[in-house]
Length: 103
Image (cartoon, rainbow, N blue to C red; front, top):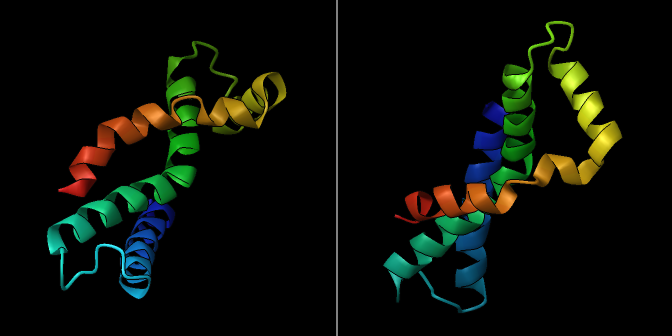
């Protein structure tokens, strides 16, 4: 989605600039490490939006009840599991996409 892509690039640039500003893995000294850590930070930041969206889509596809759309799945998840239900697979998603985004 455009929102998660925007967050990804914003997180990447923020992490890259922050590391250079504070002298940790500066881009001119350790460019590979700087890009790898920036990519990991970016996917963690964009995952805050991407993972809840994936949870809603997956649950909407898995349900057999056609009365529930994405909004119904969202409300049901929020009511039964709270906000935590949307981030249940956050670390799994980071484990899957983190190495890819670090390259």
